[in-house]
Amino acid sequence: MAVIANSWRFLRYMERYKPDAKAMMKGAPDYPEIQGTVSFYQTSYGVLVLAEIFGLPVSKDDCRENIFGFHIHEGASCTGNEQDPFADTGGHYNPGGCEHPYHAGDLPPLFGNGGYAWSAVLTDRFKIEDIIGRTVVIHSNPDDFTTQPSGNSGIRIACGKIL
Ligand SMILES: [Cu+2]
Ligand SMILES: [Zn+2]
Image (cartoon, rainbow, N blue to C red; front, side, top):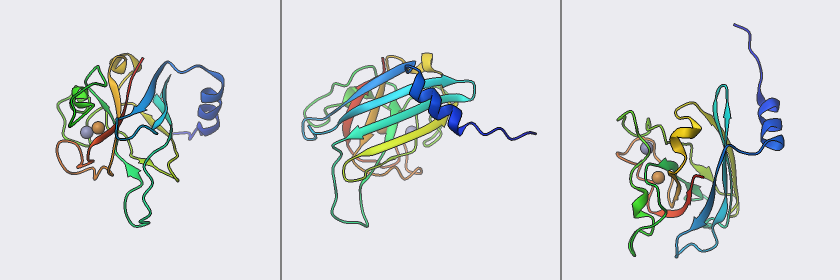
């Protein structure tokens, strides 16, 4: 099988075209500085997910934190209650009834760099039409990719509805 490198094609795609869907991220009341965008581009290989997030918490401890769980949740609204402001986002988007981290909505965690994260990933685990109207959630802790049902990734610190 021929190997066809797509890296530059994908980068040009993200530069030239409007995303097919987008989530504007907003921090929870305790994390008002968090903002940013998650953009989704349908390609023939899968969906390109491009995240650019500002204002993430910064930990001084180099050996801990600054890694943030990142998922598409099944719920349709970035609302909740005082304890969990984004409780209504529900569980990870999981139409196949799989275990974490095999939920369709599971994504690699974001790496904070002095509060700034930039990440691009390709996933064929969902199509754009499956996720419009659902939510993207950023968590306080790394995702261990093992613990059920959500990788022990801590509280929900930011959310955006996919439009
Ligand atoms: Cu999550
Ligand atoms: Zn999951």
